[in-house]
Every structure is written in C-alpha cells, then in structure tokens.
Image (cartoon, rainbow, N blue to C red):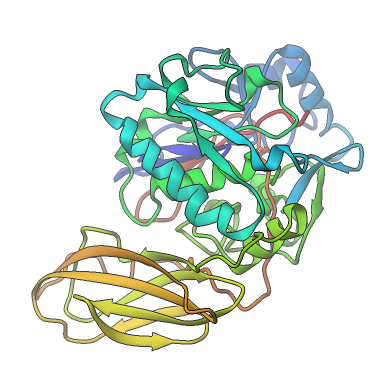
Length: 406
C-alpha cells in the first residue's frame, strides 16, 4: 500500500516507508486557524478537509469548530453534548448502501470486502444490519437518498479509506476508498480496513483516543465515552498509535463494546474466524506459525486444518498454531471456530511451503481476536491533516486523518 487507510482513514505504504514528510497536526495549540487550515490535507474532488487521519470535515466553519476543540489544552463511542452518537433502534437495522460502478474492475472486490466486513464482523457481534442495494449502483453518489450511504472511489486522497459518523447529513455519509487500497499486501486486507471504517459508521471512535494508549503522536479530542476497558488490539486502534495488533482484526472487546451500544444479535450467531498470519498466497518455511482471530460469546474451540485435516486444536486465546516440518508444495490452511451449539465459522487461505521459506513466517504482529479480556472498543478519528506515520507491517506507512464530529 502506498497510503493511509482513512478508517475513517488509514494509509499503507509499500516497500519504501513514508516518502512524504508532512507536518503533524496532533495539536493545534500555539498556531492560528489560518496556519492550521493551510496544513490540513484536502480530499480530491470534494475539497473536504481530512483530519484525525481519516475523518472528513466539510467547509471552513466546520474546520474552525474542529480547530477550536484543541485550544483549551486539549473506544469509545463518539459523544456530542454528553449523548452517544449512534443509530436509533429502527435505523440500526436499515443501514443500506450502494457501491459505485466507478470502481470498474475493482467493484466486485469492494462488494466482497464490504460484505465480509459486516456479515462476518459487526453483524455477528450486535443487533445491526447492513444491506447492500445493487439497484442503486448506477447512481451511487452523495446525492442518492435511496440508500443511507454510498461507497465510492477516490484517487490521490491522503488516506486508504474513510467513513462518517451517524449524525452526518446524507451529503457527507460516504465510505471513500482510495485507489491505493487495491495495492495492499500482507495481513491488513481491504476487508479489515472496511471493518474499521464501518466501526466509524456505527459511531465508534479510534481506540487510541483513550488516555491509556499514551499515543501522544496521535492525539485526538475527548468527545467519547469508554465502553469497556482499553483495547490496544481493537479493530479501531491504529497500529502506529501504540496499538498491539498489525492486522486490524476484531477482538473480543470489540464484540463486547458494540453489543453494549446496539444489543447482542437476536439469535446466536456462528463464530467469527479470521487468519491473521501468514498472508493468503504467501510463501513460508516448513516450520511456521499460523495466527488467527476467533471471536464468539460461547466459543468452545478453534482448530487449524491443513489440507482438510485437523492439525491442532486450541480452546483459549491466543490462537497461535505451530506448524512443524510441513511438506514443501502448496497447502490450504483453514481456521475453524466452533461454539457450544455446534455452529462453526471458518476462513481458508493458501500458502506455498519451500525449503528456504519466503518471509511469510508468522506474519509479524498479534491480531488474535480472542484476547484475555483486558481490552476495549473505541472509535473516531482525529489527528491533524495528513501526518505520516510508520504502519508496522513490513515497511508499511500509514497516514491518518480525521473528520468532523457533528
């Protein structure tokens, strides 16, 4: 990747670290509004300001409001006036969206990633429902009021993707995906990026907004309410902001936090299972680790299957499986989670084993979804425009941005 994902915006840079030296706007103290404005990145096409690494602010008045929040010194769920910013009981079941035809050859990739992000993520954890409406794709833009939000492409943005909060007007309810998102490799997939972005659409701030993160390089405001305890591995926590996961996989605390806001699923759902390392299609040595995120309220076991045969079973996190002396050649790796009702959730990837390996290893990073219960959910986005930070996976760089809170 060569960008940040604006989870509401993240960025990932490929094999060359961060090529652009941009000013950090983590604090506006001591600078004038005009200076702040001049240093804030803008979104191609709309001209909107990008703040907090992946949040969008429309117009000078809204930017000034954002700027003012930091002048007094200055997941959690986003709050305004002490009230949670979230969807109503009716709206949370009607989160409709379209996917723009302008994605061209990448459109199906976006459709699949969106469905995986909600069907195998947020909808497994809470009583919410995202619905893709393909009949609106031909006119999928900010003016289309037949859907709650649009998923649209952008090129040259200071993020990989960005989203919105529930209190935004329809004109600003967009999930924007930069063209660099289709160049990402490694453990952070487009599905994971969109899982983060959809967290923002539900009202969640970045987890590193919490003081426990001690992420002074990623400072945000204090418009949030903590839901559980701090979660350094949350899907809403930027790795470069003192996060402990480099995959953006969901955690048990993410599940607990969203259920506190929107309620648990009406029916018992199957486990969420995701291979976080090695990456799909990678080359590994005969001995390597397989890491997974497996999340469920009544999980009984997580299994690693190799070429259809159970290789190892674990009953508690972290879900790290040690593979020893696997024969050279192509292999299918599958993670399968099983709950107390016998329901299963699975994900399969393919790897190639060579005698010398290929750097696939364990993928470097944590991202084990079933944590020990010491983490929490938060959300939001706020860090001055376009500050560039090292992402962590290999030589990835992430540029974060932020968006208006109201």
